[in-house]
Image (cartoon, rainbow, N blue to C red):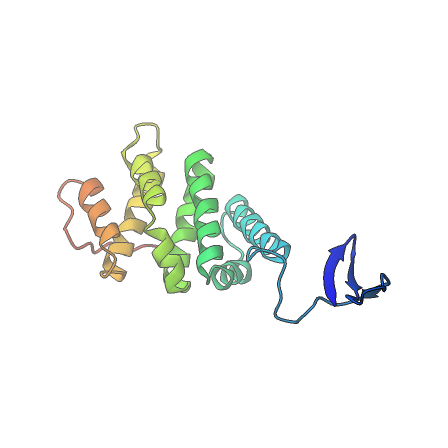
Length: 187
């Protein structure tokens, strides 16, 4: 008996010589059989919901503590952590000064409260390039520059195993700042 997807229903066709009858089954051939890729529609909805929540937090100034903790919990796998980093990167690149301040604050909170997967995704080359560009840009507000610099300094101090934070810190640290930071972030 062969089973194949025809329209919206599974169809079973008998292999007997003269039989061409088809039966409709409500389930796939086996429970372990998957026809959808790993990134299913459910996951895509979960990712878009995470990105939406990050944008809400940035628009509100990251003051909703239960929502912040929910975002930290949701950004616990590699895939969702990467989507969270992309959302933060978008806000840091294209947001106004208020949105950039909120994104930097949310990044700091997530570095302290999220999983190792989020911290690892925070060391991605494109994200750190965005941070470097933001800090070194002449068009960046000094308040945003100081906030992002202090969050980066906190990331260096609290995650010494991740050399990417330290390499960026050595590139963008303010004159006279220590190699090992001692910033106290007001988050």
